[in-house]
Length: 283
Image (tube, rainbow, N blue to C red):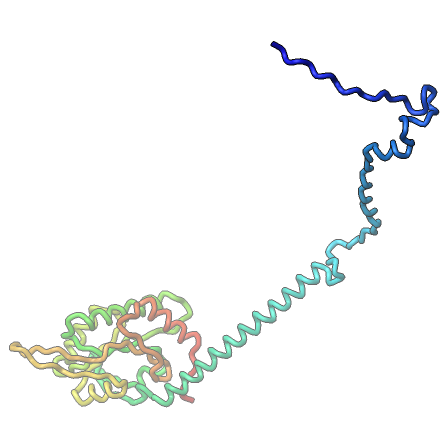
């Protein structure tokens, strides 16, 4: 069974505004102003802000090689920078050379005060000829104190000394260097024993010996320590002594020394440097 239909509400009839000709008052009982008030209002969009018009600028023509800040041209700036660098480099070299000169002067003063090896000595070489310190005046000398019965240290040091002399002999223009050996064991190292011993090393190596008093005097002149140890059943003994190679300048004074840690190449390099920068200590 269908539900009963409800009657639709009656819609009041409307007339077009102004009646049939459009000139009437509009809807009955309402003025045109009231009718417009009932209509929805429509807002127009707000206009977008206009972008600013850029002000035309004049382009500055910068000459090639000139900075925009109005400074020096690039080429002149490079010249200035180069001149400043050269000045700084020259100042650094001058200060370094001045420091080296002060060090050399201080070392010379210390050597004068020390006067190591300034005393004379009277010894015999392997040919039996008398030798004194004045015989080596004007020569560069590499000197080593040792003894012929030394098992290993003395042969190693004399071999190193001989190699250093050979390295310097290969360089033209350098003054000759005299290798020299002085024994600290005169009781066993006579002229013949020293002659046999030095033949195993450099051909120009000179070996010197003498009486115990003469050998002790030579050792004291270079402040070399030497002390013979106890003898064994065969009468053999070891001599404890200073293990250094001395460099003597042409004026006869001690100039440098080299320990066991120095190689033959390092000794040759040091001797070469002393030869090139040598200044006599004695006037």
